[in-house]
Image 1: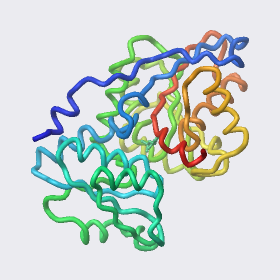
Image 2: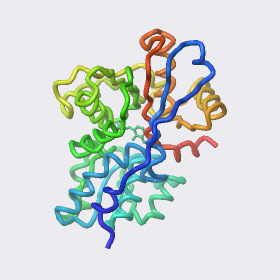
Image 3: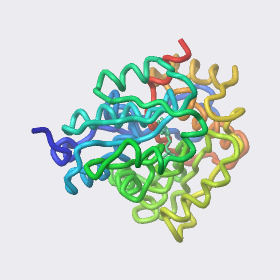
Image 4: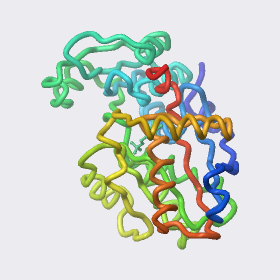
Length: 296
Ligand SMILES: *Cc1c(COP(=O)(O)O)cnc(C)c1O
């Protein structure tokens, strides 16, 4: 039998590499990227970190099914589907949307054995009822995006793989779970590092409360609320151009929903001198690259 403990205790490979962008050569800023995207093709980036202790907990408490929620392009749904299969769990995904949508992400979820349940936008609001209807006492529930204290503990471990000092760390924020873990990890290991969260959705002010409750009492982080480029999943020609230019110059692909917005926010901070000459900056590449296929 596969087990969550053995799957998630094997070491991950997420190296820190320089990101040598031409436009930065004259700024004197040293940019690096932590390649969480290389951890796994489907349990990508921060989703590996966030699921680790949750699935171990599910196993320890004798559950056999993971049930979670997401939109039709959710990286979290796909990561849960694949991780469940790896660890010997069944999985159910409740998908937001009036009608049965199908795309490459949901198709992959089904390939990994996830049972998809479609819920209208209205029904989707009431996650407790949906969980009661589709779960039982052998079901482990994970909220949309998978953020909780166990997810934060997994994200703290990102920092255990950082050996050198960075002045700034930048990460994309959806629910704020990953930012909470990074804020905690850096506060413990590198208290002078400033951790920047970039909200990829409009109206991200709630993220401040999330971090304050999941990683209380810290002052080493902040959230940038105006780098969402029009809202969740919205793209601009400038964003797509930055992604293309970066891929062409460095061979590293960023996605349009999360990490591309983080990269653009970082370039803005450099332009506006919030990040200064001589400073070292670490971008967290949280993965999610399969979402890029919705563009091509
Ligand atoms: C899910 C996801 C995020 C958001 O992480 P949160 O912990 O919800 O803030 C960021 N980047 C990528 C690529 C993701 O898939």
